Length: 481
Ligand code: FES
Ligand SMILES: [Fe+2]
Image (cartoon, rainbow, N blue to C red; front, side, top):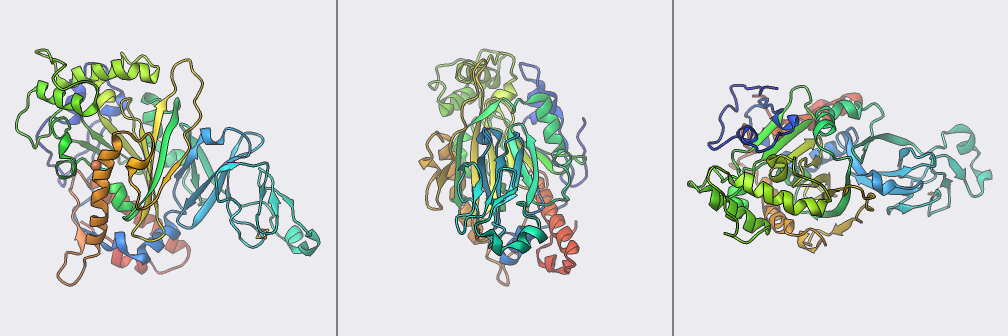
């Protein structure tokens, strides 16, 4: 597939492009990685209010989070009938469970008597019994018991007594839910994700080896956007410039699958910001950082590259850890960050060397959010699927370093986290002479513009459906162009 180009956003960084790196790969690269595309998303400033306003957060909560596909849990967490995960988002709550016949259902987590939340924790139950007066539903969501049922003839005879359900889709071991009964099918929304992972990346055979969720002091979009570009590396993670292509990362937007985007950050090359480094210097810096070998202990032969050499070391070190033969896996899959994004807030990494998946949800106010980090490790060849890791929950004031098993990733995350409250506070500065919008890069941050546009479309559709005035959205709209 050839890149779509347009006038706006035509400029690119110096340094090799990701596609150049793929051409030089020592192995055959997956077709999905060469499938790249860019569609201009305009150049107008995006209003700061979108990140800070209670009114806008309320519109998102009412019309975006209730109309989009969101990853609720992994299938492994629902191994047995009655296993359930409580998925909370923007005041809504679902009980996602496995029924006796093995199917997955998502019930609204609200008692049909007086509204009590039926479950506040994940676990395994034989039925869902309300803690208040004891109304009870079986795993299929059918009413099984009402204490003193003589007092509720109207409920039994005149209303639907089943727990209402949300839509459910299962993809690559993840369970997705959608609160909108008329939502576009998951298969359509996730089109490019399904195509790429189905053909080239074996997510199905991964299991959840690590999961932490943390409340973060910033709007969910601020936090999500902090993980969606390589542009911030120069100021936020300068320690990786010697071996990370940052401004020459690749960002894809596909016109025919607009809810899926991708960011590829090449590793094992130097940043274009630095003066010329030798392949040896790049390899030394990369290996020292990744703790795979001591600085200076590995030689890059003439005619070879840091990428080739480091990828080979990663294959030999990770192969036994993963219980896999990685000899045919491309350098790119061993080294690079291939971060897909499914609107609104699900981001799985492809590739072998990286195994993370992110999720974001809004917090109780526009100034906080929840970010989940999952590590999806390959199931070792010939072994049974390990049980999924329990969820570690970190409070606002806690550090990612407190999550057991986060390893060296926590240090990099904490660098990102240090920015976020400053961003959130700075976005509130909108007094008379202050700048009112954020100025996204035309290429590196184009995906953010697209995501904001999708949010607006959800809200407009919702307002229209409710016969509300769409001008409610006006203060938050990015002007065209
Ligand atoms: S509120 Fe659930 S049984 Fe009364
Ligand atoms: Fe970062």
